[in-house]
Image (cartoon, rainbow, N blue to C red):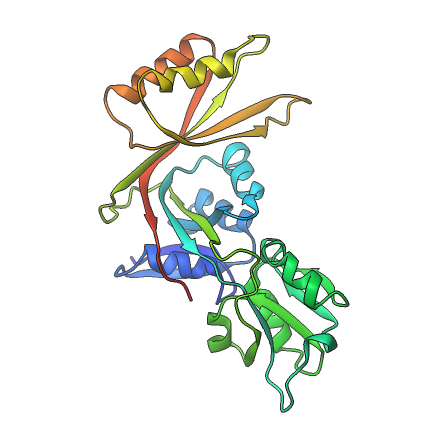
Length: 287
């Protein structure tokens, strides 16, 4: 039976590009889902074998919906991560006469794409209303289906190949070094290509009324010379000022160093939950 992988649809999203890159050479059915939550729930229920969702953007930071759902609602291991370069483009329906920027009345896209292009929109399209969609591809599809409306979408170059659209302006993101981290999740192990970089992600819950607990958690890694690439707090949703700490460790799970660090952290009353140990890839080119 052919395995299935869910991605944020419809066709033409950056998440689809990430999914195709991660699954390069594999026979697997890619299935579009309308939201990140739908993807994660589908994998958790077993409707599909795997899912690819965005985790963090270099400009706008963490995709909180992804992280919070993995923490609170589903127990899905992270199997791989891909950093994909993101190029945002302003797209309009094909027409006989070019649509000037000053005539555009509405810009549609995913909130992350809008935020990544904030300076461009403020300078060149101050008159346009902003409308958020579940994905950049849905915005592109909507604009293509209303060719008589002076609307524009922000999205990937792939949308021009899928829908009757053309570029109003290319590369409109505010910063050129724009990357998004996508993670592959699933219950079933998946053999991935070798990577020079490996990561382990954990969730740490600190004990209440323990001054300096976070310092001791970090010290458990520091004296072992274990490098951490990210530490982020997220609300536990149990009360104001109560947080989890998500920590990315720059190495895969081993038999000595990480188990020793986790045991030291748990000895001071913390709880440690592993979210995954996995290869990390960086894609150099993007659509």
